[in-house]
Each structure stands twice: as structure tokens, then as C-alpha cells.
Image 1 (cartoon, rainbow, N blue to C red):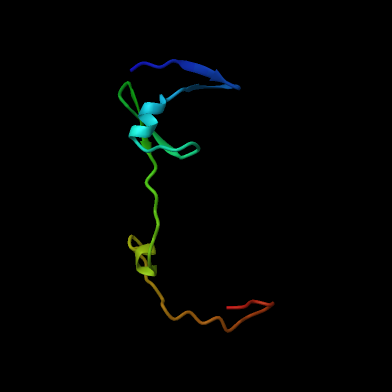
Image 2: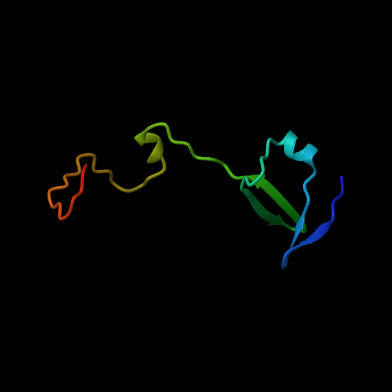
Length: 80
């Protein structure tokens, strides 16, 4: 399947056919990653991160984790 580069405002863009968007389950305004390999442009869906727990959120964290944080020095109207 071929497509053309088109002027979009001051930029250029391509139209991705609806059949391809549907096949890849890509929705309007969804982010894509653009990568260049040699003379190829590769578009990929951005991986979404939806942590289900605190452990999931810090799964790749390499520092130390302090689980008991104490907030003794409240200066304003902080509510914890």
C-alpha cells in the first residue's frame, strides 16, 4: 500500500489508511514512536504503563526504597 507526504500547516505528514489503523488498533490522538532504521521510517504504538501496585510502579527502580516515610515537618495545611 502506498501513501503520499502531504502539507499539514507548516509541517508535512502522511495519511495512514483506516484499514491499517483498525488492524493495529490505533486510535485517533494515540501516541506513536517514530524510529529510523537505515532508509526506513518505523512507526510503533507507544507502550502504555498501567501499574496495578506500588511494586509494579517501582519494578525497574535501582535505588533504595524507604517504605516508612515520616512527614513531621508540616509547614502549611498539608493533609496526608
